[in-house]
Figure 1 (cartoon, helix red, strand yellow):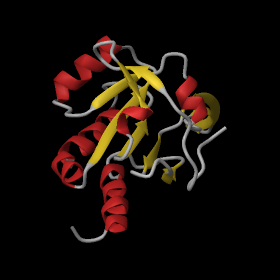
Figure 2: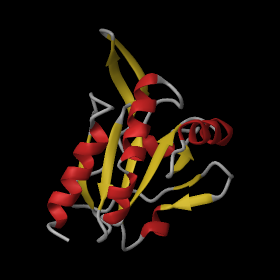
Figure 3: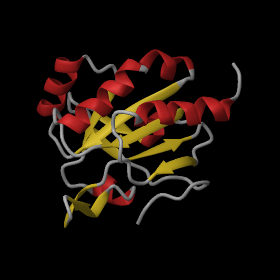
Length: 159
């Protein structure tokens, strides 16, 4: 299963770094970017997270919330947030249920071998509650946050 552009995404409720539950409903009426990544503090994941961090003021100015989701536990997320001063929430999906529902868990090819794991991907959910865009397989983690922001601000028009 995966999300479909123009339709409502699957609901979710996951724990943040402090164990508080964060749900899709918490962002009703607001643009939301949910990005899925394999593991805290690894090279590609760090580049992607720091890209969102470095563009944070632009995301805020556009009224967009950002959530990162990986299978890592809250303690790992806390270290990652503290080490890189990440201003957004990271959620833990240890059972990979949300990732599966969003098409971010499954078969992928790494170094020529097929494996099952987290598929680096991103979903932009519009303020109307529908999926505006789904980047199914992100290949350049460092450049991706800017591309997402460009898609959002281009769709929103001048402010």
